[in-house]
Length: 452
Ligand code: FUL
Image (cartoon, rainbow, N blue to C red; front, side, top):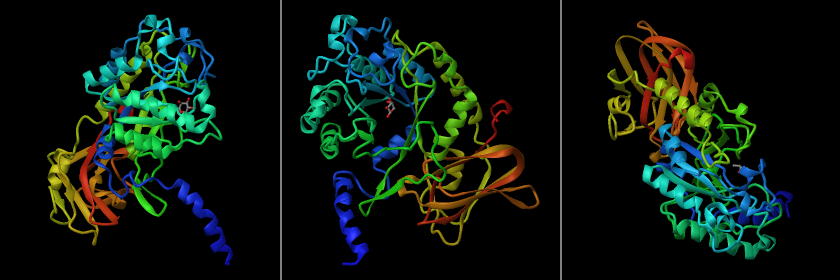
């Protein structure tokens, strides 16, 4: 047999192993849940557990349950901080790698039930879930597959049953869960039945999205620094099929995931957080920013203040779409919606070019020059990610200048110019698209000098 054919045959079992089950929706457009999730953009990650009280990042599963003893635990404080800072979802570590459970699981003694905290009657997950639901913040659960405490972890099959039983508890008793975070770290050599976990998740909460490991619907961006690549494509191919697979950037506001007594000096600056935002949300991904509750069970005041400053900076930068009220013309009449609306209101309408050939464009003109330093473009991704190449031109009153060229747009693309420009017009040119492209929003903004 030809050598290539032999290699291909040898790879077949691998493809079979890694192909996703038919329940995982395939196709090059988002599911309604993925579409809604991409609109959330900003999430707060809360790593909390026995590690918080021992100054470690990866507990080995031997910490005493009594060491978990937050003196002032208040989930509402976490959620208020997230909400005030414009974050739309919050994910809490129900169980990290050390195996300690922050809810009174019926499957293990290694939980809050065995802790002196609130005489064993506390339930962190209950309070966080309730606080999120009350405040209208989407709620997510991190449940570490790797478990360094649970004895049955040594037996793959027994542990699958254990893990799924814990999923049942968490996904049946705490209301709507928007994201279920399956961390891929640790547990070398352990084989998880990911297909079964996914089916179980969908049976319990069909609208909940699995993230990161296993049969995921939200993918890990590939680093823990808060930056997505540019270009950022949402569609991946797997086992010969296309899948919509948006990315999430998990990152830390301090150096560590868990709270440590002496790392407040590592708190990131507003300037750095803005850089992260532009490198994640600005590239069409989500940003899941970890802010760790301290040993009181509260988000530290400095971190909360930093979140507020971050929020204020974003509000100042993206206060006004300078294209609103401009006069808009387009390359072709819209199939649906109007480009004027896309520019004026954004998000509430879409404009779709009739066809992709010749170049499709949207042009906005002002009677007087206007100064701006960045563009925000959103593709109508319910149609798929069709735009492959685009450019932005500005009109100085006499001629057009090309000021930016890019490839992917997707959910959101923020393009920042090296310097503010004063111009009479702006034109977005879609140079290449797989099919008739659509826009959901297009705007020009001017950041106050302090945030440039
Ligand atoms: C990693 C873990 O090992 C870290 O402790 C943290 O939970 C991070 C979000 O994921 O894989």
